[in-house]
Length: 545
Image (cartoon, rainbow, N blue to C red; front, side, top):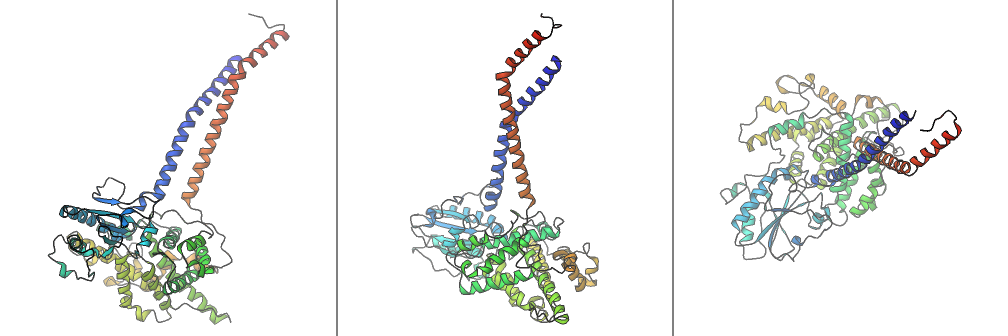
């Protein structure tokens, strides 16, 4: 009996010993996990020129988030400064990065007689700074003469020539013509390697990965669209200090009213955000702080990152949002057009041209990527892909089909620009087909002979991909303003909370085990001796040794 008791006591002591080891280990793991999480959410993704193993010298990345008035942007700085304002999600900023590093090194080498510092500022991490500087698109280059707080904008494609003029000028400011043609710049010393491409990717493989990405579910599409909409709300509506202009306010109002009608009910967090802003619109457009305060009142949560199927992040999610919206317009009109025939209910239809115009105006005023915006507006205003004719009729499917053609054209252009940058032959028609969606593998019936499309089949696959046949069969296709209680809880958030609960449980168990161990040390031996004395006194058969 005593041996069995000793064995149990030994097991308990082993458990206590294990808990003593687990306590500091668990604590250290928790600290590391929280630090890693914090760094992931708020750290490296905010910057292009900070972290990693790359050599960014002589570029200085500004990373002090506690100060919105860095000295290098004031008149207190007595050296010449070149500053790039950028957004890490912007493809053109990513493509411009190696060119800007090379440009910075050339400038430092050629300007040994004049001190010059080169800085970069992430407008995602330092929005107030970019607002003060009037940054309206990315990337934006500015030159600040020594002792001046007024920067002069520099066109990226002829930046080296303009900067050289400024550094060697005898006046504080140089009048710059940013409309100089690329042909007129050929032969200038240190010219950049051509213009920054309108839509960029570093290789053909990346272009193909964007089209044939990781398998995605409709939930992935809606989550990515919601994430990009939320990101746009927080980073692209107020690009300068103060409220929105009258024109900006009207464009935003039209865009939100369109989304409120056309987004599927499953995107309830986005719909809650939209409704909050619309219900308090006059207040929301006064300042960024009021806008964000209202946004925080929306029900539900948005994923903290884009899904694996949306590797390019913000711009990928925006395309998803645009596609979902165009399908929503078609479904809204189909549903309400039929209702007009069968009942007295007269719901206003959404003309496809009106929806397209809302999209165009939103991109013009609230999409900050300079090259992307310019390219889209030119395509739209030139009526490419038959926009001016096909969107005037009442064939509702033409709007999503038009946007689908635009998106495929972007993918083909990416492929061509990648080939030009890498010095390869332009892609063949077969290679161009490979970067279009849907591929023959996805939808063999979508393709006709000669690379032409079967529009009915394409529309069916668009509807399946971005809207869902199962949702179309339901009657409750569209958001009801009174029903906005759904909360989209992300897997990542759930995983974090589960981990926190586990850590707390382990810490409590360790604490209880250590407390029990201390109690045993104080009272176990005395209690055992008293028990033995009682047994000897009351048991006549027990012999004393």
